[in-house]
Image 1 (spheres, rainbow, N blue to C red):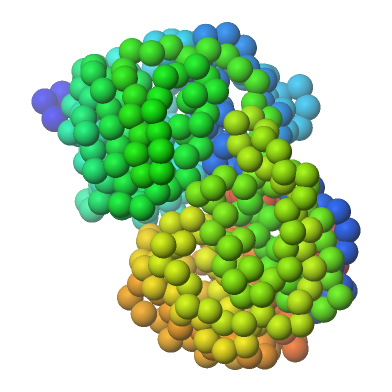
Image 2 (image 1 turned 60 degrees about the horizontal axis):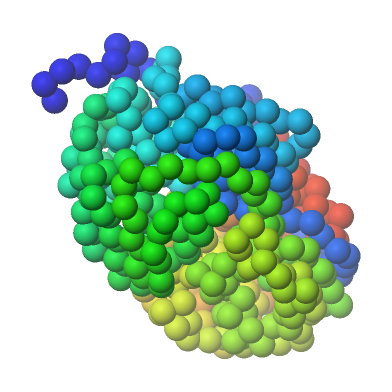
Length: 459
């Protein structure tokens, strides 16, 4: 670059989850899972609701906002960018939008914490601003690939620096005029699509995104709710730059990815029966539901309706004596990418083989989820053959043991579910990051019937 970034961009202190000791769980067989549960709000929708409300003209109210570390980080970033956000009660935000051209320069780095969604979508928004900015994250996020958003944004005219290999932090140079592009994404990623579309709001002309497989359309639906003219269909989205957003109220449904742990747990723990209220069932998010039903799970959708532009339903799930292994249709993989850790647990408890292919995206999540789940399941006595883009899991009995979550929230919760069928205690290491997506998971799990205790290991 021909000019330095703002003075505070280097050096800076990297964010981490520093603590006096690592948190762990000890999980074991509890009781049959019973009751009616309220799952926290959808993380992906909460991120987007704050972002679009901040860019809108007027005041928006968000109810059901996820009080997780990731979403709080996104809200805090917009406060740094000059947006007034009130929190009158837990899970509610009142956002005083500044308009699409009203963000102001921050006075320091913008800390995304563990939120890959936050960082990638913010890259699209900040690329068009008249000021410089730096996006940082915790140790886990700092290992996640950002080249997939940097490349298309650069084609639009953005100027973004990163560490070697396209890793965070991202140093975004303001003042670059953006132009609309036709972008055929090489990866099926709603985050990549959303980053390009959000940059497209500021670009001259039309921006089009095509995907190799359709991904969740949260951004498209919510842009429409905020008054943006956008054309979209599975695998394709198109909008023109220069449009304004108008304040609207958002009711965030329960997060399907969080509900997934209880769907699997109730399916595999004898005599269980759970009701999960108001769960979001975006058509591009329900792959796990289809996969569990293919395995023989008993899950019924009740009271189907629309909430804030998203389909929702109450889910009634009951234990079935036998799940059966399946060859997972590869076309379903993008629609269940966040649910694979707990799907692997269902496969470990099923009769026969479960075969997963085309899931190499799991290697670049909060951890290498293919490797970490394979290692953890083997520690519990499950036979797993790991492949470059998937795994073959042979169901059977689970034993107690110790597993390492590698700080990955979904890995930790998945093994808490697995422990409900193990014949001994399962110790799950490094669980602090569960708060990024599901604060209070351990409390809700115990109330439902899980055997689960928490502890902190002195360092």
